[in-house]
Image 1 (cartoon, rainbow, N blue to C red):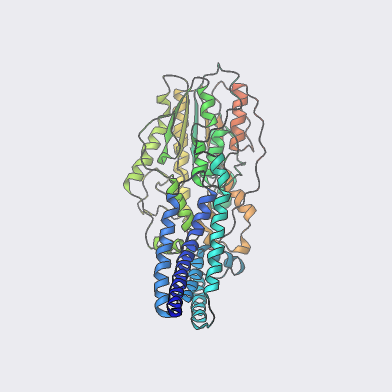
Image 2 (cartoon, helix red, strand yellow):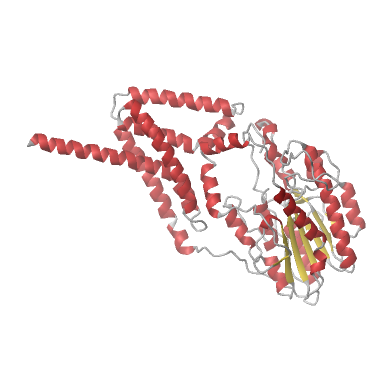
Length: 512
């Protein structure tokens, strides 16, 4: 009888251990996914976390089975697999931390170091005479506790936040509502300000500014949009006349602020229609008249962004980097056709303003890569569309952008001379962002480099009868506040610019 009871007890103990080991692996694999999901639960759905979780489970299952075949003991195989997965899921995070201490350590050397350490750990665990099940229990409780803690911490967000589109109140509407001149606002993504171009390319863009001044423009060579270096962090702020985005949030959370932003509603209140020229459908067109059926999209949906955010910390990002490096970053003919459609719409924007007063918003990824155009506007034959290290490619496209802006301005001034024209960029050319491989950690001044990347284009024409507006040194947001104060009698205060963002050095052995 006792022997039967002992047999049953052993069987139950063995089953319990197996359950704990399986639960340990599931919780280890789940934690990074749960952490990011619960921290963004008010903005995303769980589908974006399930994909990475299943990938991690698949990897841990393969590693666990191979390890168990060699070690012949569940606790040993489970412990090694758990440690392996912790390293695998945080591979890029660990690599970046190590490179801060040892900046000379290449991707290959770091990979070799990790493999050596894992081999040594494997041998140590395999030879161990101790009962390692206790360690497996500890890992299970710790990971389970972390998942539970993040889940509980997310409850207030679920209760207090709803997945509604963000809209700020318009704090001031126009006082002088009789002013009905058309307004054109064009954003040229990645157009470097004067100091930006001098610093990174040794290029003097003075002639472009001088030509605009001769056309009646006010110009600012020292405009800096200091809240970040990404379009997602800057354009929503400009269109809402305030700092509303957060560089630490998901892209979708920032871009939601593009839905009927303050600037659109300001002009709608005056009876204006909102026309939109929307390259790659980056802006949100709700309530706007899109001048064309624009194709493509550079926006990430929340599921894709969640997946990328989780995987970018793992070894999957390292593998993806190595695979992508083997292929040219060519673009298809559709993308070239798409930008050409946008260019023609920008040239002809004045033709769509006859029905009623119009605010035209135009966004184009130019001179942003891909570097499609030569300076004369013809398509570059070499198809090296994304090679930031070839500085002449950016300058060629910049020169074409200059000629395009002049043509747009000429067309509007000839056909709509009383209109206000505002031409800005979100940020300058981000050479370090794309070419960090050229910078050593001790030679990279993050404060200087960040500021140079934030130096942006900013020019304003206030119509042939309008008051000249001094915009020198103003951010894009404060430029718009000044325009509204000058033309429409508002009393928007100038906002203090944030100075806390810096783009830090990171180790890489390749160009983005």
